[in-house]
Image (cartoon, rainbow, N blue to C red; front, top):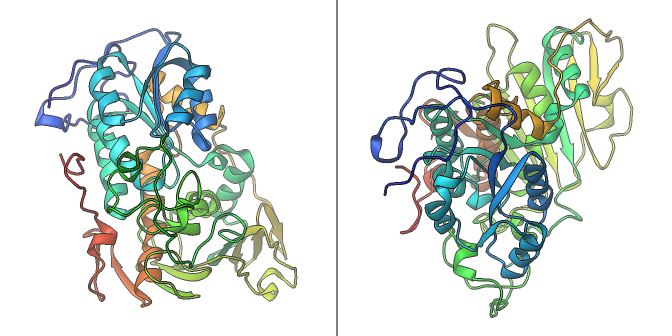
Length: 432
């Protein structure tokens, strides 16, 4: 497949990452043209409702919305009313094929299972990419997204907005600079999925999809199944074929602070206690324990994740009741960090950390100047997503997982390969 050259480019080729090659067709990356930082960015949005509504609005504030894609034709019609100058599509592949030469950047705000297919095709065409969290449904896809972004020298950003906040960055630097001493345990909890979407359930009864929903396009790379009430427009996240459960939904937010502060990539193991599940819908609740090996900057760390209403014992919080809505606890040998509060002997230390102009604005700045956003795919979003998704391997198997991150292999349990690297159906491309 060949594609026309982008209408404009904003980055000098050497300003973002090391030299690489444009993956599609094995041809060299197209040379960047220097443009004024004030020139408008030609945007496209894939997924325009739910989180995609605000993402597309943000994109339109910082550029010109040239094209929008949404498989639900009712939602597409609403987007075209918001962006009357844009062309509308229900199939992202057709949009990118027809519009690639007129685009600079794309936002991807689809169900989890379509993040990688949409983003990879766009990036292989040389388009900068903003993708909602979790970056991908599987570990291999997350690794590949980072590789393709780096090879194409693209500005990328995952939509974990809290990563841009001063409070999160300050807390991360407190951990990094010893405000609570050596950190040995982390406890992260969330109220999801309870009250947000159902998990631990049987499939809905098959029914005809709405006339405005092309069901095959919605399924995309997912295995074929009949439409049923409860998949679209939101409650897909509780299904293994479409989502990543509570872990994928919120971990890229609440684990971002300790990830930033302690470089929590490549866990060596994970084990899960759950309510049980049918390997179709995620369990109602889970408690997942990760082990991270020591590095030259910190000792070994244990991270315990709680979802579905499960909470850490209050004794770990110095007798305080954990918030049922969610929270973050870091335990060090000099005190604790509870959310963004230093307690039980911990003292603030002077830290200097980069301030953000705003989460989405970081991506725009990266497009125009080459200064990568914090949560870019190769260096941050990809490794964070990989680490968290190892927990879902433990949830699925019900066994302790020994993880080889370099090889992307489980060392001690068979039968998990399809959860690590998916197989795409004909018409979609994973590996170029």
